[in-house]
Image 1 (cartoon, rainbow, N blue to C red):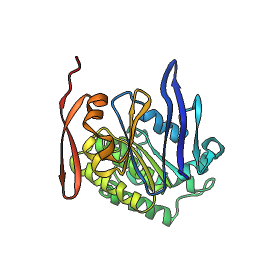
Image 2 (image 1 turned 120 degrees about the horizontal axis):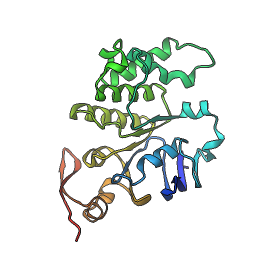
Image 3 (image 1 turned 90 degrees about the vertical axis):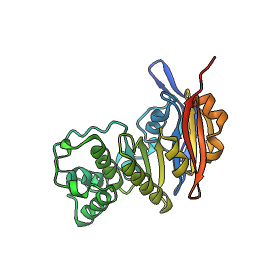
Length: 260
């Protein structure tokens, strides 16, 4: 059984249909990339999987139960969500912002304990922000804020992590660092769903891709089966350079395909 699944999902944003009959999901230990051009419905699908977008049709289920049947606290414990907007509103030390990720595991007015602080510290270390622990979170660069918010999501130790463009705005070193860490979490059993625009990273790290186009699934499967020349031309309007390095395939968009 797919742990978290959208089944024939329809989502409307005002008068516009953002998703039209989309089915997709993630199992424990899977690393799924949601890809597609701007406006394809990637963020809407991720928000629906997190229970943040109300379906007009179809359903989202977690372990076979409607996602809406889970209380907010239980949902927050089991699903981690990283939005695309990397805004931090609190002038708190980075360590405190990351520790907020432990809140779904605390009861009432319970304060974070030693174990919670250790988990948060491990998340900061994994994302190379341990040296920022005492700095006010509002005084960081965009890339640093993105890693702080991802660390906060990881500190919750979710069974499934839903991350919207987690490497956007990061330099190449930290892009690779984040993708390697997510791949390691998937190998350890966490279900990972990421929205990506970088096809090279998607092809290298994701084990399965869901290609969205105009609110529908254009293709789904292994990267080599999804990122074909025909689909890149039809959906993205690009041609790509392809190759293999250190046992991994790469896809590098190279030039635009002009219609007409």
